[in-house]
Length: 282
Length: 252
Image (cartoon, rainbow over all chains, first blue to last red; front, side, top):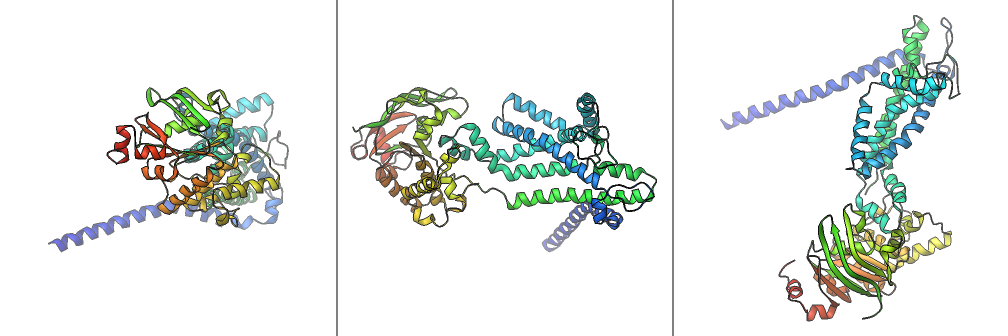
């Protein structure tokens, strides 16, 4: 009797385990398929020329995507310059004054900002930056992306700064070190690996944003190093090329997708490595 | 009594509405170890945190009365200056995790933006680590992280760090409560040597420790100073019944 019960229980256990494993495999499969498909379609066009060359007109083979890579890097740079200082200071404030009213509203706004559709953020950036300046530019695109990145940096900085033990700050204060230096030179450095990894995740996220760039960075067929002129970016290039009727352009779109996916993957993987290896031991 | 470095006059400390330290007046003699003992929650930590203005960092905390360092009211001084003159070592060792042993010792200078010549810095590090009786143990590992040391070594590193800025008084807030007996006895021996150059105020809930290392003992109970005097006298002929009961372990 009891043997039977045990056997039944073990069998149930096995079935359950099987289902759980099956479903978790199920959540890996979409990613694997995306990677596989993109690489299969795109890897063929990638070569040195593709990376450093400029786009060619339809019908001409051998065009590159250098302008889009440069544009994406410029956009990331502007977004980071905007989002990192603001985001880390916001995180410092939230972790230091956890219970103040202002912290409550800051946290709330950051959460809401995170949920705002990126196309809306693009429109806002258009109204605030593009219209007053009178032109589309890398700068305006960077601001739009910065607004998307900002909440991620704030939240991750807050979380890791909260993990810095109070006793560590006390040790610094007890040495007669003023509060601002204690925060900047003890708390922030101790939390740095976590902050950096949050920033990298933010970059990985914005690297693939298309919608907010449509009416800010706008896109550009040519190489542009000027912050105040329109630039191309990888997602914009993919969007435009994939919609075009030309074979070469469609293939280039696949190639650009591979590059973009690699950037995003690297961002995620490096961020994990930093957290695991470089973590501060308290 | 000898020269008093530090004196409190009717010191009261509050957290919000609750009064945790009640009108404590005490004179701490120079170059001696003064132990503040009492059961947990009697306000001894709060009391010494008033002596270097750490108490006010907690929101809702306030104090009344005076704390005089060489006859100057520390609450009229710059708080960072007070903390450089009255150093502190905490219950749990807390070396800065991002810094090497060398940098930890110099933290009081570096974090304050004070630049030192290489030779000066080296001298301060060696001197402070020698005073903390750990120079020989770590002299070959000065550039390794302080957090890789054992608990007892970490605590001595924290002592060295507080000595490096040349304070007049060092507050030790139950410095051995997180350490094993061997590390504890090392730190107790250390206090004996340290008092040559600095005045020590030691908070402890361990009666034995107070009797072993201190020259003067104050007994705090429920925020009130019950008794204060030379350790030998307090332990042999306590004036108060409460002290006697605490010493023989009736409560606490």
